[in-house]
Amino acid sequence: MKDRRREVRLSSREDDLIVEAAGLVGVSASEFLLDRAIADARATVEGHHAISLTADDHARFIAALDRPCPPPQDLVDQIRKARVLKQVD
Image 1 (cartoon, rainbow, N blue to C red):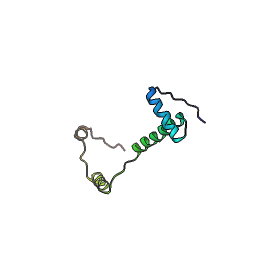
Image 2 (image 1 turned 90 degrees about the vertical axis):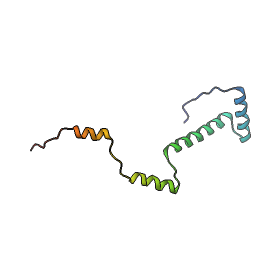
Image 3 (image 1 turned 180 degrees about the vertical axis):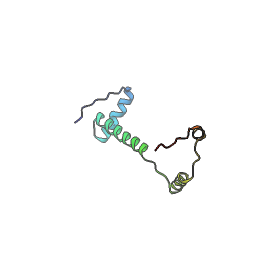
Image 4 (image 1 turned 120 degrees about the vertical axis):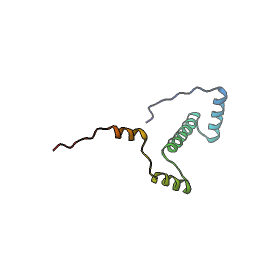
C-alpha cells in the first residue's frame, strides 16, 4: 500500500526530458521517476553496506588486521596513573 507522497520541483526542460524518457520506455513520468529513484537508492544503500576487494586488497586488509596495534599513549598514561585495586575477601 502506498501511503506516502514526495514532491519535487523541476524546470520545464527537466520535466520535458523526464516525460520523453518515460514515453520511450512506455511508463508514466511518475513511474519512471519512482523506478529510477528506487534503483538508485538501493544501489546507494548497498554500496554503503558492502565492501568489494580484489584478492590482493583482501590479503593486505587481513594482514593489517593481524598486525599488532600499539595502544594509544593516552590509554597507557591513564593505566599508569590508575590506583591499584585490592581484592577484599
